[in-house]
Image (cartoon, rainbow, N blue to C red; front, side, top):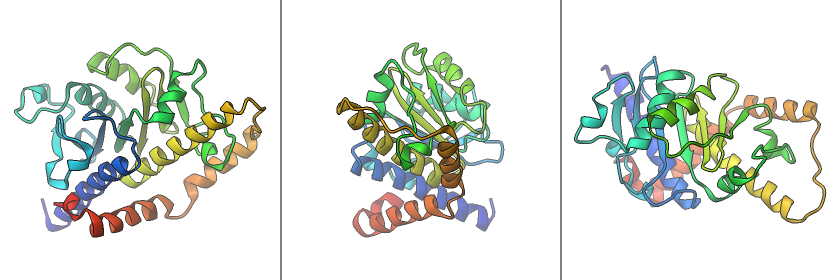
Length: 248
C-alpha cells in the first residue's frame, strides 16, 4: 500500500469513527447494536465495520475491523463481527458495489415509521423530499438480519437510485458513496421522520408536495455542492476539539 493509499485509508477510518461518535450525540444509537460499514477496495467487498459488542461512543479509527464479504471463514476469526452485521452488511457489500457506505440504526422516529402499516416517507417538507423516489420499504420482515434475511434486504437495494431502505418492523438503512453522503442521509431521514410523525400527531391534513416538485427537490439535494462533506467536516472539527480520541 503506497503513501497515498495509506492516507486515504486513515481518512476513511477517521470519517467512519466520527460518524459513530456523532450518532451517539444525536441519540440514534441503541445499546451495542447497529452497525456502520465502509468498503475500502474498488470491488466493494472488503469493508470496515464496528467491532462486535463495542458501544458507538467508544469506537475509534483503529478499532474498526476490516473484513472481506467473500471470505466464508470470517465468522471463525477471533475478531469476528456480530453475526447480524455479517449477515446484513456482508450481503449488501457482496451484491451492491455502489453501496460504498452502509449505515443501519433503530433510531426512534425511523423505527416508529417502520412500525406503521404504510411506512413510506411522503414529501411534506424540504427534508423529506430528499427521499422521494429514492426509498424502498421492506414489508416482509423475517426475523433478525442473519445471512438469509441480509441477502433478501440486499436485493431491495439493487437499483442504484435507491439509497434508503425502510425496514418494516425493524429500522432504517441508508447507503452512500462515502461516509459523508451516507451519514448526511441518515441524519436527514431521522429528522424528516420526526417531522412526519409529529405532523401525523396533529390529526390535520398534510400538505403533500406534487411528485414533480418532490423530484425536483430530491435532485437539487443530490446536486447541492459539498453539503454532505461540509456536514461531516464540521462534525470532525468539533470532535477534534472535544473527543479527539475518536481518531486514535
